[in-house]
Amino acid sequence: MRAVVCKEYGGPGSLVVEDVEMPEPRQGQVRVAVRAAGVNYVDGLLAYGRYQVKVPPPFVPGSELSGIVDAVGEGVDSVAVGDRVFASLGTGAFAEYVLVNAQSLVPIADSLDFGRAASFHQSYCTAWFAFTRRTSIKVGEWVLVTGAGGGIGLAAIDVARSFGGRVIAVASTAEKRALAIAMGAEATIDSSTEDIKVRARELSNGDGIDVVYDAVGGEVAEAALRALRFDGRFCVIGFTGGIPRVPLNLVLLNNRTVVGVEWGGWVMRNLEENRLLIGEVMDAVAKGQLNPIAPVERPLTEAGFAVAALLERRAAGKIVLVP
Image 1 (tube, helix red, strand yellow):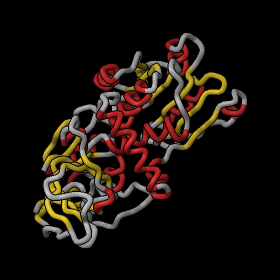
Image 2 (tube, rainbow, N blue to C red; image 1 turned 180 degrees about the vertical axis):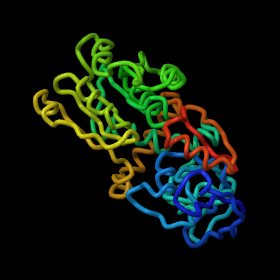
Image 3 (tube, rainbow, N blue to C red; image 1 turned 45 degrees about the vertical axis):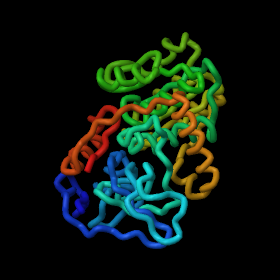
Image 4 (cartoon, helix red, strand yellow; image 1 turned 90 degrees about the vertical axis):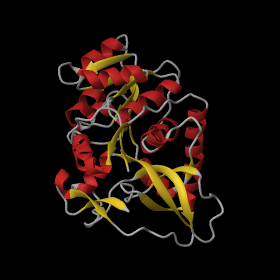
């Protein structure tokens, strides 16, 4: 079978497609014929050796996939050959076939195609976790989403909108801002030319933002924090723009709350609760309350370029690799 192999930490050229041995499922495992593999920011960090957890090369990147059950190991009765499923895993998704623990597989809703199923899980679960377990959104509250044209930001817009939030999207290009509006944002801010604090307060009728969902960090984080109203909540999602240094008097003097949102780490400590969370997300998708964006499809041979586009913040929307 073919797989994308990270030969060494580095640029796009370090990810090459090779023929590797077909894996055979063991006790409790399932082999999935991959139909689509989501390309995520963390996949790029791992391939470039920039993630806090280092995976020694050679390894197959990819943490999100969808496909069809191809074979099952002993003791597996929760799924059967032919089932449509998706899953999240640490690495290994950029391949034609992947072994997955049976308990990690989730049936794909009839409303989802393979591309959406392989690219919505991590971003939507992160947003759902943020807005149901770490804070909450009241109907009519203003929600500021940074990095709004990427997969994480678009999912946050969709989830916040489903809870009745009024979303203002911050993004750096016209293409990304158009995607944000299509997803349900009421207004956008051009982070490359506009003052985020001033514009966000203007758009929210001068009252300020109730909730910030910040996946960018860097200089954007402080501007977004300053846009919060008294008693506002700031959700820390990630740092694609770098880890910010924020003066904490901005938190104290306005009684604001800063909340860390690390869904992946929470999952490892709360497996049963996470199954409930995934069920809630899947139910909302099935009912049409959430509408994951259709991803751009690329072949396995373009894995390196797809990862580079994410790390350099050139990509809009979601990308999947299709074996």
